[in-house]
Image 1: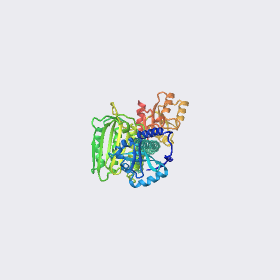
Image 2 (image 1 turned 90 degrees about the vertical axis):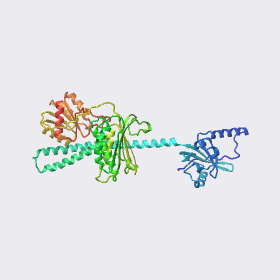
Image 3 (image 1 turned 45 degrees about the vertical axis):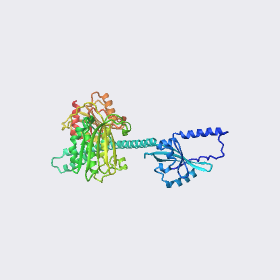
Image 4 (image 1 turned 135 degrees about the vertical axis):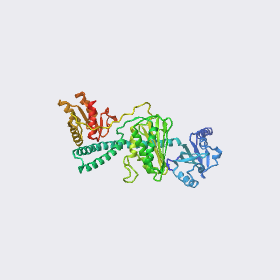
Length: 531
């Protein structure tokens, strides 16, 4: 308990006159007594030995005792935090300071304990001394403070993850540019060498390392919610059911896996591969948290959270959700680890045992699909992840996936707009080897100037999406005015623009993700030119 000294209350002396007559004094005393008796705060007067000499009606109501019972009791009979041995010191301290305000607890007659705020003061009546305590139940206000603190912590966590996500997306974008150069030149160099050449093995290792780096950038893009996805109407029970066997092999025979599908589960709109990513990452984490074996439980259910049951996570709104619950009985996490669990590259595993991107990937997937996640964990009690996806009403056809086919030689004229010199040179070389004529410019302003001042026919605009002064969407709109009917192909290290409130660019399917191969680029160019 923390004590706060307040200005002392003046003594009431015997010879002080209250009013001008005995009747007036009596009226004032009656009013005083009525005011104290009917006060909404509990009032206690205590004698030097710690026993109550007066209690008002609210004191009786709050504790569940009769007045007669309380007047036979002592302070330590109702305050579980105030042992008898402290009374003498408390009495002397209050005599010195005159008044204090502090928080403690009271125990009702039925054993229920609740928090209170006490304002205690020293009162002298003639040669007698008393302590007067004015007590207020602060159960609701304390809950409100705790709830406000919890929401503030969650808001700060959401803002921190949002900032990290922006950084991660930018890093992944720049990294993908470099990987485009590495993979592009490796591919072109490999195509120039005869089969069996000794350098081909080294080129293969370069490509292998670059593709492993691509996996890292994909995870960063998932966290920053900038990966390309193909969401479909999805029966989560069916999708999980088809994945359970694979999860069983992943976590090993010493772990029990239990799947409890919810009845009449609503549909969600989600990319099936993203649901698989979530389950795989959580299963791997659970396996690592239970090296001696344990139980992993997966459940689904319909839920419409509202009010206090709605976890705060930025822009979460009440409504129907499908809940995916994944829990284990492993080692659990403490509060410090829990506060950083979704940060990219944060891991408690040994060096080389994990990248720290698993849970950050999950977080990005959930946010990208307008869902939210709530994690509960304590050391030694295991961990539970509750993931909520909005209910989807309607039907959607699963899109057909087409693989890129080897490109044939072309003869079109392509305007290439790319602000990164290395990526521009590499992409221009790719286009030239495909037989097309390439006009490469370093940015949007140069592209506009070229289209305004020359009359060279252009069949296709191949432009980066994120560039200084103007993005690819605005550039394509302005060039389409100058060159009606021109075809457009967007390329980027991530498919959403960080400007304009995070709105997606109007790709209309005309998009190629960096890094790309020559065959993939050829297939995209051929497809767009034929449309």
